Length: 171
Image (cartoon, rainbow, N blue to C red):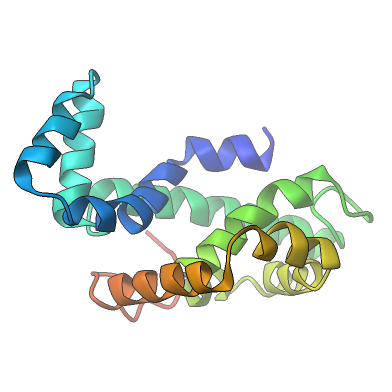
């Protein structure tokens, strides 16, 4: 399947939720949180989000999503060892499907773990991120202050997690 579907199947929300949603929920009082959670009809989803609220990125869901994402990155790096782009010698939808996830992963301060042992992927990302469309389409979507805020928050979370100091996403 395409990179976009594979990334979502790995549990991408399990990576994003603790970093992007959790901080806002932590600002709420217990009664507001109870109302939010009781409004969720899916009991399993409710319990998972309660766990992610409590434990942040130190949850099985986050680690499973990280492992799935790592597998996709390994696959992409293997492909890039054989060709300039993911689907051959020309940039294609396959490249543009994976690119936003790497952009967000760099915001989440996963850079070091993303690139370690994946030199071809790093070079591919650096090449595509220099394109004007990247700057307009990804970096231009959000104010620079918002991007820096997310990056700073994620960096702090990673520094206090059980992943601190880890060189590569491996499990």
